[in-house]
Length: 108
Image (cartoon, rainbow, N blue to C red; front, side, top):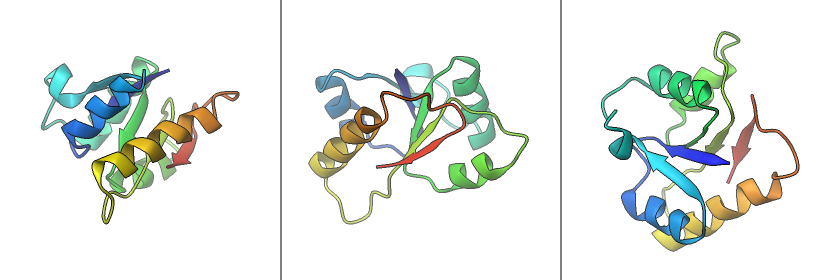
C-alpha cells in the first residue's frame, strides 16, 4: 500500500512512517503543494494511493458521492507528538490490511 501524505502532515511523521517500512510520498515529494484537496484526492485515486491527512476537509470531500478515492487515513494531530502520530498511523493500516480500503476512511 502506498500512502500519499497531504501538505498538513508534518515531514517528521512522513520520515517516521518510512522508517517503519511504509511507502510514503508527500505533496512535497510530488511537488504539488498548493493543489486543492480535491486535486490531491483525485490524483491519489488515479494512482491508487491511500491519502494520509490531518485535515478534516478530506472527510467532507469523501462524503460527496462524486468523489472516488483509494482510501483515507485521518488523524487529528492536536495534542500528539510525532512519535504518537507515527505509532497510531502505523497501526491503522495494519489493522485493515486484510481488506480493500477503496472508498473507506480509517481513523488512526
